Length: 130
Image 1 (cartoon, helix red, strand yellow):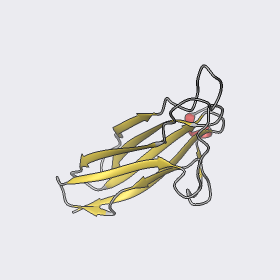
Image 2 (cartoon, one colour):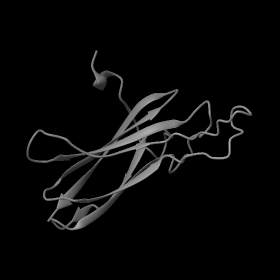
Image 3 (cartoon, one colour):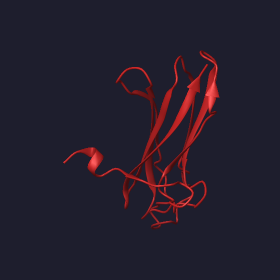
């Protein structure tokens, strides 16, 4: 079995587990580009002790070359847990993160998220560098 065999994907507008990548469609080489990744943008994902997003990872794959670059890892550790019981805690971490990157070539942003109940989900967004 391979990781690709268990990765799930769908349109983030209809599936609450898919990571959403928000970034410009086009940037100038070497200029700062802000990339935001989140889960639950269109359809809210539960953020409870029992059911939550644990992490999101963001990668960049340039059009030329085979290597994938790791841009960021966002881990979400507070899900309402408490010594008083599940969902009674004082804080919940929302599944979202942001990276500022300087791209030198066009490529594809890739995001992977992990739901503690429904597994690993992926999405991608092309980005052009002028």
